[in-house]
Image (cartoon, rainbow, N blue to C red; front, side):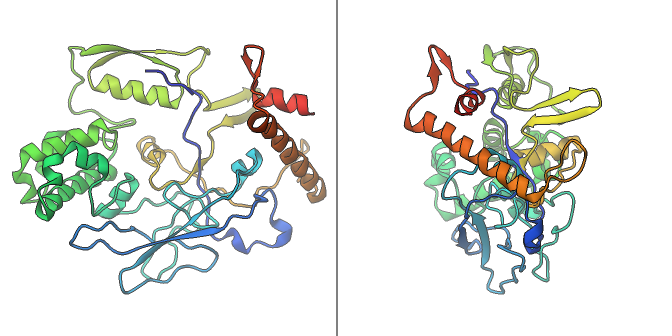
Length: 371
């Protein structure tokens, strides 16, 4: 297994809602791109098995109001063109599941229709089965094409068979999301299932194995209840100790494989790296989590007790003296920085200049040449 880009990490950004009302003078270090809003409107799941959204998000400073008809709206952010690297880090990104236009965090609706976690430090994961399924990136009221391919008998069984499958699957996901610090074993899952779904142990085992095999449950850092098989089923070499390589190595090891991870550097983590010098600390990558709902990083943060701190759109730049850089100087530097990035992008994509001899050209090298 070749982890092509061991430096790839889950880039993320939690951002707080409500910064859209900031004055023009305070709107510093924000994306200069126009980001049109895209509305995705779905209806609540019906008995026919239609999928539905699980929450409402606000597209601006005005909070959404509740819809008595059960219709739930999710507003997402779409970008017509890529942002600069500085803007990607500073601006509040759209959530992986579709965040509000001013926030990378989708806020769960409260009874009065206002965002409950507008000013909270740690995003609140949606509760209930719908929230757990949404967090797992699956539709609540219907089978995915992959599920239909893996369960052809259920796919052909009609609406009753679909409902039984979905109830079992959604219950298992709910159990895992509610307590991701403890392995969700088959025995524990079967005991916790409500009747009559606990009377189908064979189907429960199949669904449990499917969710575990595809990484929907029992991933990350958790306490195992069932020991790893002592007899190894095979040997696998994983190339690259980035987040992807480490994750796949752990999964394979849990499935009973003998795993070796190879890394060219003298450290693991790939793009996830922290620079330390004397009393100074700086993260070099993957310190921003873009979107918390539907993002496995939310489960990992819950497992290790890590607090996610919202990033506001206003992100001032400070100089070595600890004082804010003047806005005029900041704007000039950002304009020049974006111009350099666009020039480097032109070299790579338009001129296909990505190698110097046999060596790949890094972004840093390209910027040096442009300068």
